[in-house]
Length: 320
Image 1 (cartoon, rainbow, N blue to C red):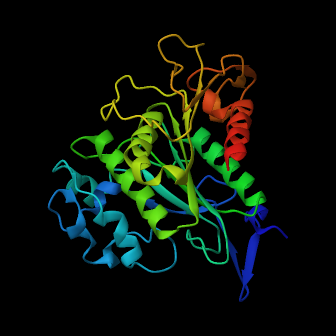
Image 2: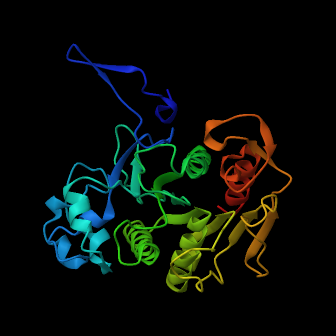
């Protein structure tokens, strides 16, 4: 049986007890996950996320889901210096916020990959447009579907995968968007350094399209050949509070946009490394992740369009 498609809404019989295994990630291929409310990583209470917070890994999330809180988990924190608003302490202490970073994994496996014996792996990171609590599977639902489809397509080609979902901002950071740019840049660097057989695909919807551009632009000087593609899904930079200048110059960019929703749509980019796809003629469910009849895509439904998702997967796999 293909365990990737073994949907554990079924039950596990262990020692006479019936346990129901739940899907927490919203991905069918990697149904479990480690959720992180990133401002709460300020474990020493100095209103910053930085190396000082990595001194005791037992206080950090088990990012790679290997059952240990260790130096591998601390690496995600060591490479950043993110100032927070003082209110972050109250938000964490009272459990008022929600996780905006999620590392997914299988039911019975970690989020690590094995680079021995010529194995290949792909890091697939999706950044939604508006996220404040990834435990709500309706948030970044379209991005999750795209990431899920990319994971499935790569694993069908016998490539190992790591799936990550994030929002475009860190709640309670001094600059929420810039903070997430810094966090995601370091996270991708950690994965690429730790797993030399891994390449990366970054997918960003709406403001998330800006986030993934910044990450790729900051890393392409050292890791350009490790990126398969950066994917925009109706990239919007209006009201984005982070870096509006950085843009990949070498890494391939797949820019999918629509013009059906005046004032809220992406646009083409005239660069040699960009493939533009005007998806205005494609259709998606009227109510986005809630389904409904098919109609021409809008900004809020384009990430849930099956035909748009298929185009993205086909384009990425051609470059893999």
